[in-house]
Image (cartoon, rainbow, N blue to C red; front, side, top):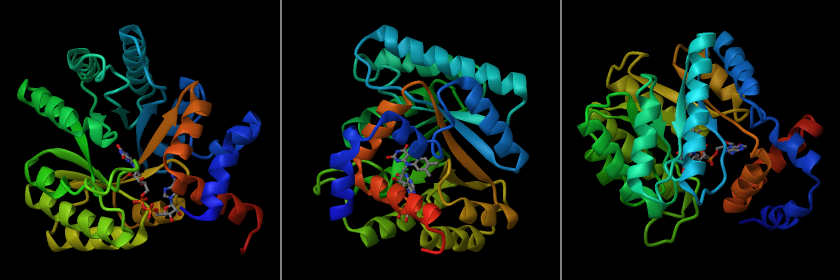
Length: 298
Ligand code: FDA
């Protein structure tokens, strides 16, 4: 963590709410479903697909998990009503995984029953086994429209990728700070593991959501899908709202599918602070990006 990142993180809680709001506005659709609808419609008009994430804080009661599940059903209603080209991304802990895996399962089932594709985000390593297990249970029960996420930072990931033949998998680096016995810390080691995991997924016939803003990885991924002669509908690139839009636009112009992760919700403030504190590198990115926009040509 650089000195700048550390300083930003320490100062964060002292930053006035409106300032955090302004900084995060680029990365979060807004606090209401209507904000997400508008942002997704705009993305669709540019030829981009979307995945919608309902922001929620840690839950402690089943009723809170059920409320998040209901919020997702509202998102699905909106997707249908507006004819949006979008799916949803859910976090199992928000749906009750740590209270009772059966509750999380019932909530995912209720969301997936609507027929729209449901991506199960991957959270920290304390949830990896339970997440993969629940994903497998859902598939075994006949739910075709669910997919999962693997994190290249984790040392286990190439093995997990090999075991997921035929699945729909988002591959990302992983946002959580994990212990060194479980995860690579070195930037190049994470990249190398990403490429190996991508190979394993493509070898297993997976539909891969290549989720990264790292241009070097994007080039490697383009080479891999090119070598395998995959058509534009056999994989997709994925990026976060407001991040590396130029790279995304270039991929789109070259004929690749691009899906944008669109978070929204009333908990935008808590979410922004928590994500920034969890991974101070993100604070550094935002600071650098904000400076670049304030001081053009920097
Ligand atoms: P890297 O960190 O090297 O970033 C490359 C460049 O992109 C940076 O130099 C910076 O300019 C820019 N950048 C990256 N992240 C930024 C940010 N947040 N704000 C501003 N600029 C940024 N993780 C996870 O653990 N579980 C999950 O389910 C998901 N889901 C997910 C979905 C999608 C669509 C994406 C794109 C990412 C995730 N992630 C995730 C997050 C992912 O694991 C990872 O932390 C980030 O994508 C950053 O890694 P990059 O591969 O982009 O490379």
